[in-house]
Every structure is written in structure tokens, then in C-alpha cells.
Length: 338
Image 1 (cartoon, rainbow, N blue to C red):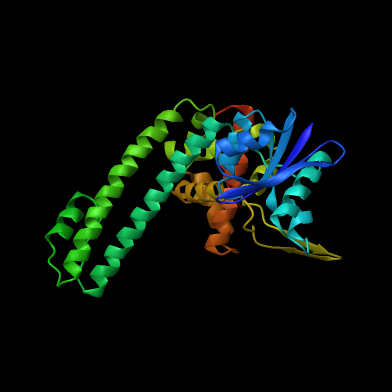
Image 2 (image 1 turned 90 degrees about the horizontal axis):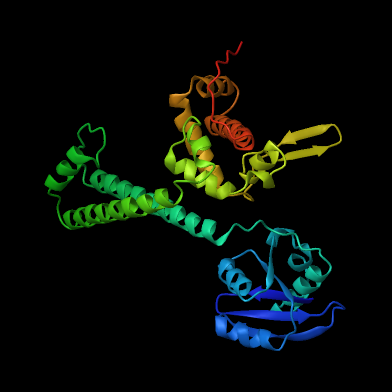
């Protein structure tokens, strides 16, 4: 077996190839093109195994080498302390250390979904990004109206049909009028693209095995159910509900020393897409589920709103784990707190 350590960058990748005894067979910088990697691999005997850190655009090099017959491993960058704590850090050394760790089977790996799942996740993440940009544009219009002290009538939705007609009828002093019209046009464009991508994304996840179970949860609909189903991908990779909650960034950190035990924040090292989806769904669950509403009210007696809603989101996540493990829909059960 030949082991490849790949230090991947935007324009090129430094590759180090070693044999089973750890002897360097070939190394050098390779341009990030399929042809360049084919040329580099031609001089190496088969089979080959490679490792690359999870980082910017890792999926391109991972998928390209996988298609070329390389058995690939995706390494967790925060757990590769041998590289992170090195006093001398160069592309050559990083690639060599990756290759040696792969040879010794010491790579802390990251779960890699199938290419089909990765493509579906990109669709949904693009849809989320477009919605966020659309929201920013709406906030800019509110700010613009505030700058010109324009009174806004009571609308259920300022950017609905009636609200849109009101905004179109406004005549602001320049350059306000030009800015308002530009932002209204951009909102219309964003909404068009959101509908197109959402329709495609819903279609490709229509038959996902987890979607139906997740849609039965309070606060969930087709959008959150599809996003969470794709981000989890396989519930079997989580041995306990707590493992899933930790992966979602919904489990608090614990600092324990002697007789002192202190609960900390959830921390940034998590799947932020899952955390966002469960927290947003928890807010919606307060309106549709008596169980979650009572739970939130109980937590609010001694916790801040942000802490209480994260606790509800964690509870929602633990329920989702059981539903996916047992392959059954959610059932609302009455709970009375003393």
C-alpha cells in the first residue's frame, strides 16, 4: 500500500507518497487539476490510500482522487495536534506527517456523506443563504424608511402583496428613491431564485427515508426536515442521543475539577446547520406544541430566553434521535409540571 499525504490549498496541493516502511517515494507540489494528479500518480504502484484535512473545498480533491481509484480519508483538522502544534510548519512537513499518520492508522477521521448527499446539501445551503440575503435586504429597507422618517402602516407582512404596493407607491427624496427601488428589485429577484432552488431541493429529498419522521416533529416542516435529514445522513453513526446533541452543538461543555463542576457554553465546534435548524424549529414548536411550550415556560423561571430555547432545541434533538432510530413518527404526550 502507498500512503499519500495531501496538504491542499486553493491553487495547488503538496503531495507526499510513502511506502509501508515510511520511505518517501515521491513528493512535490501538484496543480489542482485532474490531469496533474493523473500525471503524479502514474509513477506510483497501486494500490494507494490518501488523506486530506477537512477544510476549504476539500470535497473537490477528495472526490477527484476517489474517482481515480484512491482510497481516501478525510481528517479532522482540530484533532491533528501533531500538525497544529508543530514549531516548524511547512506544506512539505504537513504532507509528510499526514502520510505517516495514515500509515500508522492514527488519522482522526471525519464522516463523509455520499456524492449525491453532498450535492443535495449544497442545494439546501444555497437556499438558506439566499433567504438570509433576502432578510438583510428587508432590514436595509426598514433602515432606509427610518432614515427618511417614513411612517409604516400596520401590515401583516410589509413585503407581502399589500405592503409591496405601499412600498412601490412611496416617493422618497433622492438618492433614497433610487436605493429603495433597487432593493425592491433585488428582493423580487432573490424570491424568484429561492422558489426555484427550493422546488428543486424539495424534489430531490422527496423520498428521503428520514424526512417523513422529522416532519412529524413540532416546529418542523418539509424544509427543516430535509435539511436535518441530509445533515444527519445516517443516524447509525451516533451511538447515543447525547452524541447527536453534541454533534449539533446543543450539548453544554462541562468544566470539572475537584469538587467544582461548572456548565459552560455549547462551543463553536459543531454542525452549525443542525444547530440553527433545531433552534429555529424549537421556537416554532412553542406555538404548535403544548409539551414544548410548558417546558420552555418552566425553564424560563431560572434561565435566560436564549439558554431556555437551546435546552428545548436539545430536547427536540433527542426526540428526533429516537424517532429515527425506531423509524416511527412523533406522538404528542401530555406533560404536567408541578
